[in-house]
Length: 348
Image 1 (tube, rainbow, N blue to C red):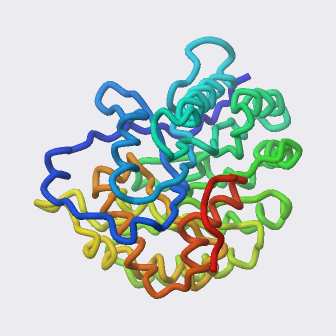
Image 2 (image 1 turned 180 degrees about the horizontal axis):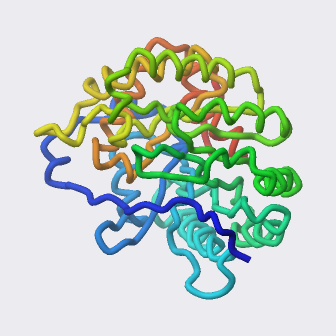
């Protein structure tokens, strides 16, 4: 049974490898264990990013011990009921995880945790879909994501006030039964819609993607100070809910307004740290390092900078943090939230 309000779709970006090659740098603090809390894989006509491509990035000098796969409408089933098509993506990600777990591709455990997609507007009828996703994950499925991002100026237009829809709430109530978390992707003017959901389901872990979607383009660019104030105030209100954690990343997307893609050369880690540092530091101040995790959002953010430069920027932004705080930001929170048991030293 398909709903009449499909999740918004988008076109995978093209990568400019020659442009990325114009700036290279060595990984700093290469021994620090990292769990990349958010990445995708896909094979589209104009854009391919599969296991060899991911490995080329994560094995570029940083100590990435594991990754979390996030749904991207990739490898959907061609046949069968529409609501079951996302099961194909979890089957695909689990296959990649099995390849990685063999050790034949190095020490990193890619797709060690998987977040799939389920149409939450199915309401209670989503139950068999969730069960199928869990089976397809082979013990690796940790959660689902149904994109809530909605803004007429931007590319994602989800149904209005989706989190308050009674069908959505019926489906959300079933996540705890299957021990699943929920990844939420929305733009910062919508953040106030999240608080009632968090309050209604305090036992369900919720992960806020991409720094809470701080928009900095279009009409938002002309009101940067107000946007910053509204975004920060919304984060403070949401931080009251202990079941919420936040991912620090995604700012390579054009909607953030940094315009990295328009530069003649790709940004260095210093450039990235200057641009994204204030927002990251603010989020850490509000949530605390024990509720924040770094994410690459690759390959989406590969249109803006290299993997090595991004994680160098994260390390420079967090340079003043304690060892325990760095452990949380780079691996500990992701391991806890996505229930991963990967080799990493304990925090001092």
